[in-house]
Image (cartoon, rainbow, N blue to C red; front, side, top):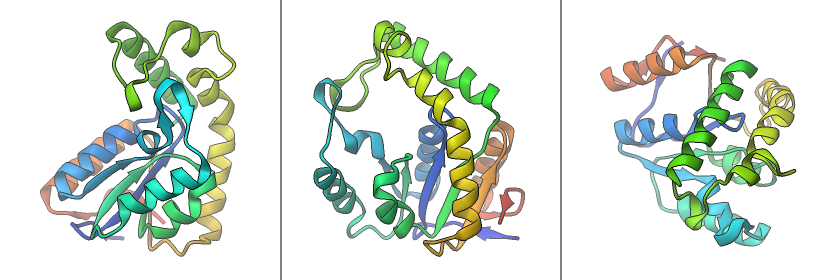
Amino acid sequence: MNVKLDEHSKILVVGTSGSGKSTLAKNISNILGIKDIELDALFWKENWQESSNDDFRDKIMQSIKGTSGYVLHGNYNKVKDLTWGNADTVIWLDYSLFIVMWRVIKRTFVRIITQEELWAGNKETLKKSFFDKDSIILWAWNTYSKRKAQYKEMIKENPYKIKTYIVLKSPKEAKEFIKELKKGRILTSASTL
């Protein structure tokens, strides 16, 4: 199956925390010249405070309003009607547990060492990342199987009438996907459903 993505595509990138959604989305955004919308950036406030549901929904609506094409990335179930419901293409990074855990641990260490500023000025700390009940590493581990089952079901049932699903099973497939997207925007190597 051929897939054509262009400046009018409305793409949602999903996958377990740490799988590489943001990196893939930024690449797609740059290649297609479409808006890059990171759900974490809309959700998190200073000092790791969460946005209220109404505020979060409003931020998403304002971000996608009036744009002919965009790439959203994130896994927030409470706003699926806005994310999945407005997408024409969903890209699922369906990587192995080993790859996901390696990536999330490596990314977390780098962020702690470099003191990389995340959303709203937040930074990851050794305590929060490794010794807290809300640890991103623990979150990735605990949600891996749940997300996998959820996305399989979403694809099977297709409640939001998504036109195209692209499932990338490895970082190598993601690189090939980006390579083909750069060449001509007609993709044939991605696993499509």
